[in-house]
Image 1 (tube, rainbow, N blue to C red):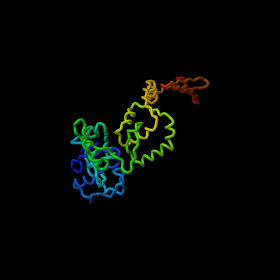
Image 2 (tube, helix red, strand yellow; image 1 turned 120 degrees about the vertical axis):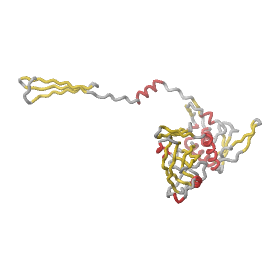
Image 3 (cartoon, one colour; image 1 turned 60 degrees about the vertical axis):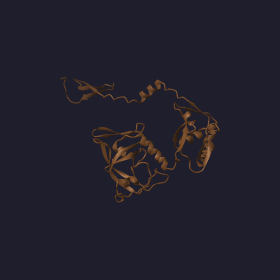
Image 4 (cartoon, one colour; image 1 turned 180 degrees about the horizontal axis):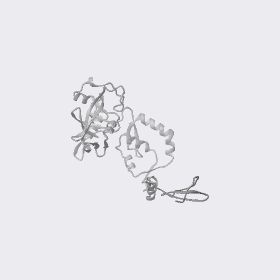
Length: 313
């Protein structure tokens, strides 16, 4: 999700909350717009991975006060930002380390982030339109999208962004059992998958019907002709096999009851002990009997013989 924060006394829009990143990143263009000087940077010797196709050597890192939220419903943390000189649709990136320090809980479907403050739980909401705009700009920066072209449907002109296309050599493959349904994928990847599935798993899977039990609409998704990315790759490879999709049957209530009974902790009952004792004496000697009994049924008996004179009183 994309939020707005206060960084170095400036309102900073387009801040990406990335739960998959272990680093907090400030991009060079934002660094310059905040009037920060490179002499304030401290050396950062490690390379960063994941921001592009190749490792990136940071310019350094800088510690900046960062405020999340507004007014009394806010928290300010001093964060070490790694400064990188790469193009990005975002101004900064907040990673999981800072989210843990903030005690934040992020809900991507609801586009909101909650975190504790002295006044209670504060919430920061993201903007769906900004999220979509930043995502599309990120794709354009990676060079995966072609120029926007116009289409006409029922007399209405609109615009459509072309789907990402594989780079380098491509190979046309058939989707499903229909010859007219084809798509282009990377030839190198296709040759690799052909070798793996043909020489190893493929022969076994082709000889048997594969039954998939699920309540999700996987069959309908894989048969679409406008797929892209990893889903398309899965659809192409799975089209060679005889797949049957069956609805998953409901779990019997007794199984659920047994599961709950097995893994539910039984509260411990405090143990209480009762002490019973009696004594007697005669001409041959004296002694006492002791019985200790718990509320759980445990009983301990003990008899004692005294080696000194006693009386029944």
